[in-house]
Length: 304
Length: 291
Image 1 (spheres, chains in turn brown, yellow):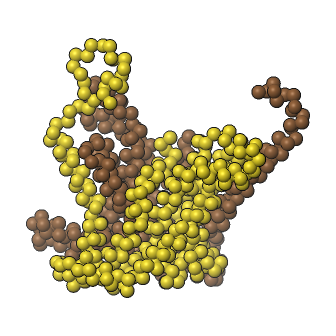
Image 2 (cartoon, one colour):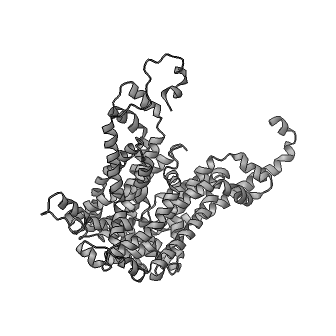
């Protein structure tokens, strides 16, 4: 190669350089629209949010107040309630991972008809959380499915109304959240299991390892990256995708019992018209998800 | 399939007892497993069951429990402007996806095949935007879009969806193109296609599977979304279906059977897309980890 190129090199050099430059220019121009969209509609608003978090802002006019807005925000009990609700909802994450893991392992046994089962299990994934929230409301309602089940079990004197009480509404929301995450996480784990070398399990079985031993020593370690990814996706969804469920099921109530950070931002901004404080809450949410997001970037970009 | 086949070196050895591929699970275990799968299936089908059964009752029948009626389906269009809402959802969805692909594909291509000095940094910048939830920038975004006068039609929502979808689609396209040999692109350029020509005639045809993945993922996400449609489409007669349903539900005055009928209608398109393109969905979700 180099021998052939060596001779006409002085002639080739000039157009070669321009070719390289042209390629770089084309590359830059091709990335420009994406960069523009992201800067204009995501980057700039972050900057604005930082500025407006120090102001009193109703969406039209803003007056500079300064760092005291932050001090004031942290004295607001609603913020702490929302943060606490988010923290409590984190308790649902083990279920949102454990149940799909179990289902994926079941599917992986390839029982007769497993393909049909797989399609059924993933089906709720396609449905809007608005619709799933409506269905969940039916499930938890006083005349809903949950009470029918309880009564069918012979406990006819017990009637629940989980969404109606401050003490139970958040649990109902958490249960619904787990249900909505099952499809996606099962999908992830099943993909992970498919990449597992079956001869490994077989070898272990021949060596006399029991089913649990195989699961703990071979299957689970193999899935660790998928479990990490599912964990991150679940936590991010918990912080930023519950809006539809809350809007339909509880409207944040009773009281502030199911108001999470993202819903507090919406309420503060659009129900109370306090855009400045809502922008500030947005930044808090941003920091919380960024911490989780950095972990995710590291996971998906690990081989770059 | 058998142990022997997977280990041909054992063929010549005398095997005293042939080891079957899978240890024969006791019959009871197989049935228990099947039973467990059926139970899970029932739970996952529960939303559909609720929607179908409830929508087939009149309001009175719903309150008393028994009975069957087509009433809520007959009244559906008068209670929920379902046709218009489905149309709005379709318009917003298609336009956003078109924009996301048209912006993300050239960017992803350039980030992996036409690199320039700052491209790794810019790539990181664009992809990091994936981590910013809309709620975090909701207030400035809302005011900006309003000031630009985009909340009057579909355009505000389309731009916001495009901005939110571009980082992921760029990432997905860049990952996809990394698997395409450089020579192919070189050949096109040497043939005098020019960069735009290469993009249109070589890159787009190659990228069909990636385009499908982006389209399916974004379709389900945008079709199912509430927040953007709720805030960035101000005219009530341009509302997408999820917004229409959510607002009626939050109002607590609409009859439940009609809401359930509407929910079923809204769920149908996303379900069909999902069933038809399941594998693209899985591919997109596990992008970057299963390689």
